[in-house]
Image (tube, rainbow, N blue to C red):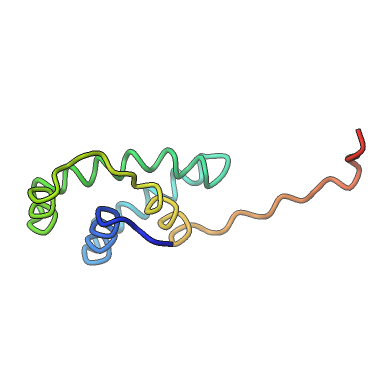
Length: 105
């Protein structure tokens, strides 16, 4: 999975900051557990990651520099959301097809 530059910066930041990572691990797990599937969880997580990027861009020097150069035009955080769900949650069980259901309707 490839991340855009903003996503990569947040991923690197979380990798280096244990307390921030711990917070986000809990948040990702809570959201993933509450949603029907990983797609819905990623949709819910993505705007929160963008808000976090904007907030951290005002205080973290590396992020502040990038924001000064590139601006803070809204960028998708969807790939990062999907990656964090894959890394920090247990895989969901595969749905079994009902053998009694008929495909021939």
